[in-house]
Length: 439
Ligand SMILES: C#C[C@@H]1N[C@@H](C)[C@@H](O)[C@H]1O
Image 1: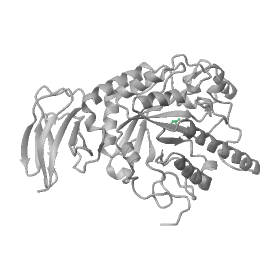
Image 2: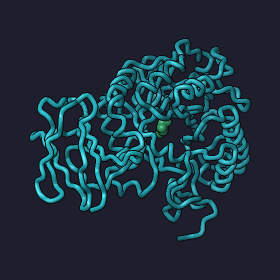
Image 3: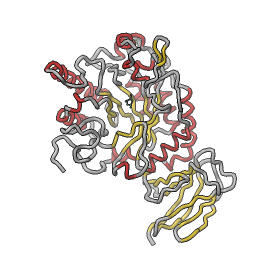
Image 4: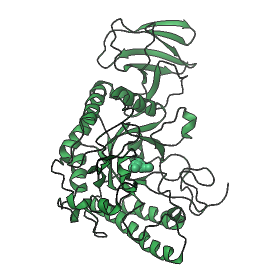
């Protein structure tokens, strides 16, 4: 390995309590909200097929027309307490809110720019009441912040001239000021979720970003920052030149998931997922495949089975309404979590051989083995291979199902678990197994 000034600061997972809480979340909520929710994927009668929060980049969208939208930002339906209650009922343990997306519009009254809610008809802080409402529900809040900022005059995607470099110095100072401002305004935040850090101009700021990360961590000890914030001095992102993880967890799983434990390289990670194929901000006309609550539950359980967290995205509309499709998902996921959450919260990878019927998760607090069945076997029997030295002490069917499990030993350390007739497998079926380790 090579010596790096600005590479990974730690080998292996963080072992402090704050990261331990993060590791056990299981389920989170992402909220993408901003000016882009006003056009909602349309402009001048035309349909924008891209991600709604990128509509400013669409050549059919006049940039100045977009930049004037703040003059009509006045979300009468905004009700952060209702949002937080809905997230609580869904079972979310953390929430990530876009304080500023790529367009540069700030949902908090930043003293470093006029392009914020303070200059809109709404003229009140959006972020503060949201943080309070989610804190009150016991849901940890993380602040999403886009380094890329299409509004700031000093922003550059690359530095080609002396003028670029001088302008960018001002942009770097502005970025630092806003981040320190966010931590000062909202000190209960548990971490920052960075985005828009792929530009060459930013990647070249390894020393600045490293120092800024240290400074932010000193402001809020234990602050959790993912691998997407900064590059090392060789421009390496997420993993430094030696292949070691930048930041506290891997932040590359956006709209995609690992398939095997080897894919996560022994790191903490979370997957952030859209409900349609690729819409984070509000688009009034979702096209293509829209994920069902069972699909999202399966992704959530798969994440837990591979030592990760799963985050479902919500994109409120321009008035601050949560759209019906997302409210239905929150309701259905919440109903399942109500009696099955022990298979997700505090759970992680179990090194038993993966079976076709679904996923194993291991509850770190109880030691129980959870079997979450998505592919119900035609025989009604789950094949379970138990590693040598493990004894099954008891098995319960949890959730809305009841009845006893018929345990049949096929041969040494391999069993069929017979599920009761009439088991409702229209939703994922969960069994909790108590095991005894050692001969
Ligand atoms: C690309 C990109 C951005 N990253 C996701 C988390 C959304 O914010 C999307 O706009």
